[in-house]
Amino acid sequence: MTGSGELQPLPLRPRALRPGDLVVIASLSGPLPSLYEPHIRQTVTVLERMGFRVRRAPLLEPERSHWWSAATPAEIAAEFNGLLRDPEVRAVIASDGGQTAFGYLDLIDVEAIRADPKPILGYSDVSLLHLALYARTGLVGFHADMAVPGFGGHWQTAPAARRAELESLYLKLLTGSVIGALPAGPSWECWRAGRAEGRLVGGLINRIALVQATRFAVPPERFDGAVLFWEEMGGHTSHVWSYLQVMRHAGILDRISGMVVGIPREIAGLESPGASPTLAEIVLDVLGDRDIPVLGNVEIGHAGPNLPMPVGIRVALDTRQRTLSLLEPAVLTHPATGPAD
Image (cartoon, rainbow, N blue to C red; front, side):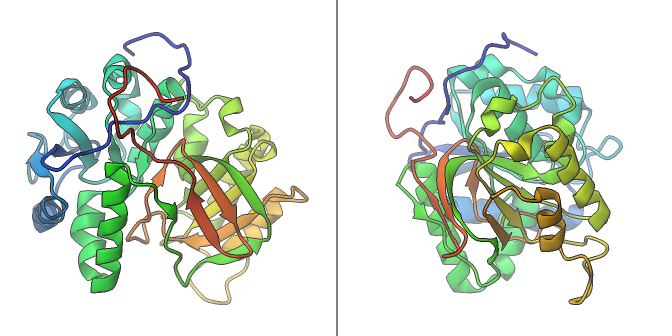
C-alpha cells in the first residue's frame, strides 16, 4: 500500500461536485455481462440529467473478464489509481459489485486519496473499499447505488415519484446541500426503540466481519458512538447470526450507539412471512441486553433502490419515530488543503 499508516483527522470529505464535472463509471469488481450493457447507458442518462459529464473507464467492456472479475486485481487497481490521480475525474461510480476488492486493497494509492479525495459510490463488494479507505484515510465513502443494479436497474423500475426523489437526494448529497432527514419508506420498522447520534459506519455485513480480520480493519475506536448500518444478500440466517457474533466478539457491539439494518435479499430462512427466527429476532438475540436502538428494513442494499449512506458522516437516529437524519454535509463545498475538521 502506498503511504504511511498514520490516522487522519475525521472525516476526509471529498470536494463537492459542480455542474459539468466528470464522473467515471468503472469496473471496481465484477465483470459486465452484455445483458447489462443497457443499464450502463441508463446510468449515463441519469448522471447527465443531474448535470455531470460521464465517461466509462476502459475495463468497463461487455464480456471482459478474468475468473469472476472484470480483470485481474492488479489491472483493476491500476485503473482505479489512475482515476484517483486524474484531477479531471471528480467522482467514481462502480459498475457493479462482485468478489474482487479484497485482491487489491494493498495496491490502492492512499496518498492520491489524501491529496484529492473524491466521492466513490457503490455497495456490496464496493463497501469493502469504503471501510478500508475510511480506516486508512478517514475518506467519506458513499454506500450508494451503482450502475448495473442501481441507477440503470432498480431506479428504472421504481415509480416516477420515487426516481425523482432519489435523483434530487443524490444530487444534493454530492453537490453539498445539507440533507437532513432521509426519506423514510413504508418498510422501516422499529426493532428496538431509542435515539442515537454518531458517525455512520457499515456496509455489507460479511465484508464488515471479514475486513476486521485484515490489516485494513476499521480501528476499534472508530466504532465508539457510531451508528452501525449493514445489509446482506444470499447465504442463510445462521450466517447473519454468525457475522453479528463476530462483531460481538470484536467488541464492536459494545461501542456503537445505534444500528440500521437493510432490507434482506435472498437469505435462506427468511423466505416465508412466518419464518422463524426473523431477522429482527436474530439481531436482538445477539444484542442481548445492550440498550442499542435498532431501525430495520431500510433501503440500503441489494433490495434497492438505495438510500445513500455516507460512511463517516454524523447522523441522528430515532427508531421510535423511524427517522434517520444526516447532521452534516458529506462533501466540502469549498476548496481545502486537507481533511475537514
